[in-house]
Length: 152
Image (cartoon, rainbow, N blue to C red; front, side):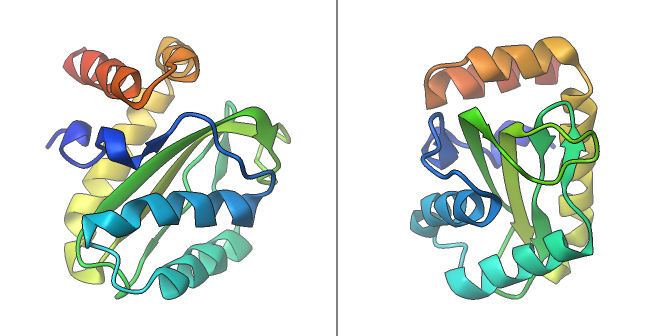
């Protein structure tokens, strides 16, 4: 399974307008609507925010991965957003986040969801990957960085 099977250019926002956690989640959820895989945007956001209340998905290194299994999506959905200014996600390391990966899945697809999350987490441990993702200036460039590092 490749991450690029799920994250496509149309689901990437290189300059998030949001300036807080919920607004960023809403902005990213909106780019997923044309996929047809989100059957209830507000319910999807509600589940993501409930997961955030359990503990921040700001994992450190200026990265957040808000995620939740929910019936409000039909399949694994992934959106990426970059905030140049940073957003407070109450991250584990206290830093604001610049790279946000929004994930959701139908509870029937937990296996694929967990594999995706593990693969993404592995890549995000690589400083060079994070720096290249931060420097990518278009959705196509983001996908190219992802493809390059998936091969490594």
